[in-house]
Length: 305
Image 1 (cartoon, rainbow, N blue to C red):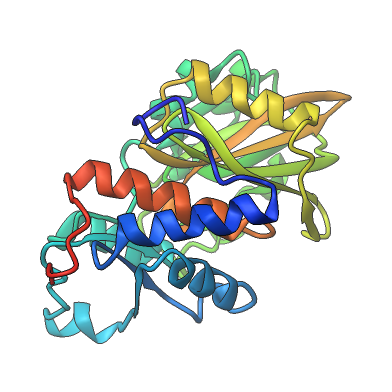
Image 2 (cartoon, helix red, strand yellow):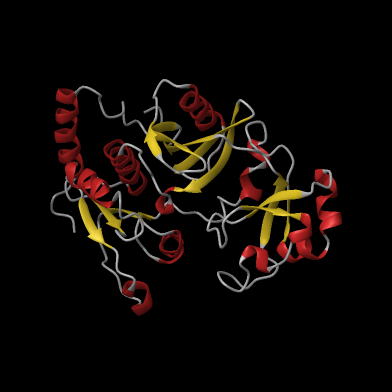
């Protein structure tokens, strides 16, 4: 890897990969613990757990009672990495003493924070951020900079996504159209509004430092994930963005899409609450564990607890 001084990624040859796993197990020892929430990504939980155990790291199963009762494992002396729901990732990042804990800096991942810096790659060439009630109450003024389209794409500014992004016709704008009162109550919720673009394909990549460590492709309408071509144009495009754009955190999830025959940056997401679909779990666990160790300054110490 080019950042963090960790050397190359996991080797592709089976014999080299086995030797690499032994080295990682010696490095990690009891120094890294992954806290996993199996019910959030049930189809891939076992693959993630096995990848963690494969490098000699520990696995702890998340319990919601920890937050409700104000008590959780101390995991003192270890680098701790959470992967599960966005809500719990946010709560861990804001309130628990684990380090690094959760890669979920909600403020840094707001679209309004990184869109301006990523404008040359973005799918949305024109966009505005406004309060949801402003869009509903005065669509004419809000949509004027966008050319008064009949329909718009609307998503929350927040990466915690209190509602899912959707296309809404101008004559159908209402608070209810965005599930207000079901998943959130704040009428002034900041939202991103942009002209509608047709997305044909999507790719998801995990970026550690400035390196793409894993990725997969999936159909935008079916969410059927398949392995990504490591030498393909989408991965090269993601690599360029990872090198040139200041990402919100040391570990981020970067989504690329194809629209009108061109590749674009679709969105950035916090790692700790992101579905990794068909991404190579051992490669992800390896790279994220390494950067977690570097963040907390932990050295392999079988006696730490």
